[in-house]
Structures are given as structure tokens and as C-alpha cells.
Image (cartoon, rainbow, N blue to C red; front, side, top):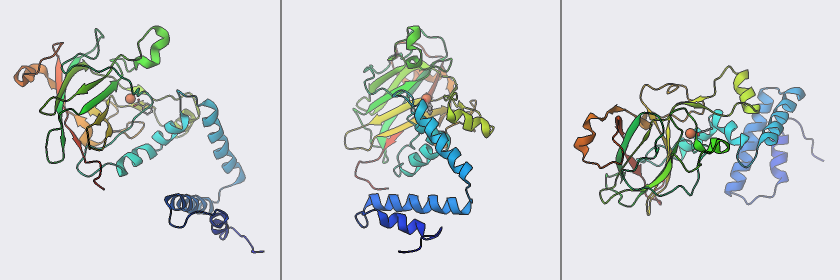
Length: 290
Ligand code: BEZ
Ligand code: FE
């Protein structure tokens, strides 16, 4: 019998699995075991500390429901979601950012120029831009799927009990023959990620706030291209430098301008905007490797 000690145990655990040599599963399993065992040794983790970790994970499971996935939130506030977005952004394409918990894949199709916010209060903003590949070739027919909070920082889906329609403030636009898209909506406000559970306790323990910088969510798709999931933020807005889930990237910050120039664009809109900004999406081909 071999003598397992605190150093040889890592290899012993790896050897206990019969994995296909060189497979992705084996690479991930061995990598995670190596890093977690190394951290456990280096930090001299005590029984109490380890039990604290396990109980924290247990609490995350207890509070999770189909609508609330506390482990995703944990991944978000610890920067793992952002890191995975960053390493999976294709060269030349728009940077990826958080999907968040409020996406619905069956948002209504809307006409270019439509107003997304009906008669909601708030600053009406014209959002416009293009969808192209990285060589600026327009992508006519690209789908721009968007969803957002309102001018008080609430997603309608969170207020269904108060009579809100969960499909409000979301829609799918199809880019025109020049790859352009445009619509009006209300500017969203910042809001907090849920902090009444174990992740909230973690934030409090580390003196962190739960606020997200105001943003619009997008998934953009086009035939033969890699989808992008991202968010657009606003220059000089609150929490832009300390978003609770690390979603902000410099390239995703739009500059809001007065609507004065909107007429010069010649874009027909259902509602007259008070302000406007441009954001261009760039997609990479499906097969292109990073
Ligand atoms: C959101 O952007 O909607 C969101 C992202 C992460 C956690 C909670 C909400
Ligand atoms: Fe959001």
C-alpha cells in the first residue's frame, strides 16, 4: 500500500479517475484538483474554514430556484463570469459581458424605429448603430435582441405580481440592408444584484456594495457568425468604475449626446428622442479561432 501524504494525495486523487488521456475532461479535472489542493496546502486551511466554505455552498443551493441561481451570482461577484467572457471574446469582435438572470429567448419582434418603453417615465434615448464583421462589412438581417431595466432600475419581469408584463422593455430587431439598427427606449438606472442570500453576506463581509452600473443587455446574432452576449454602459454614470459584477469594459461604454443631431441621421422613430447614442456591434465568423 502506498503511503498517501499531504503532497502525494493530489496525484492519488487524479489516479483514482479513469479518464481518457489528453481529453478536455481530464485536463479540466486535473487542473482544478491541482489548483484547489495547492491552495488548500498553501493556506493551511483549518477544519472550521473548510466547513465554512461547504456550508456557504450549501446555503447557495438552498436559496436557488429556477428563477434564482445563487451560484451564477457567486460567479458574477467573484469575477469568474467576467473572466470567462473575456477569454472567450473573439479577436476583433465586440467584447462580451454578463447575460444576467433576466434574459427571455422569446422576446417580441419589433420594427426598426419602434419605442421599447411604451409610455414609461424616463429620458427617451435613440439607440442606433451597425452590425458588421471586423472588416466593416455590414450584416443585413442580423438580429439584435435586447432587454433592460426601466428608469427606476427595475426589470418588468421582477414586478409581474404588480401587474407588469414580463415582455416589456425587451425586443428583437432585424438590421436593415446596410446592417443598421435603431430604436428608442428609456435610459435605465442602476440596480442592485440580489443581496438577501449567502452572496449578499459575502459582499457585506468584504465591505462591498451590490450595485450594477446602468446598462442595456444585448445578444446579437447573424448567419455564419459567432453570437455575442454583451452589455452597453454609459459614460460618467454611477458605478461605472465599480460595477458589482465586473461587467464594464471601456469598449462597451457609450457616450450619450443631446438628440439635436437625431434628425440629421434620417432614421424614422415612433417616438421623438431626448438624447441619443451610437453603438456598433462587430461579429467574428463562427469558425474563426481566437
Ligand atoms: C443583470 O445584469 O441583470 C444582472 C447580472 C448579474 C447579476 C444580477 C443581475
Ligand atoms: Fe441587467
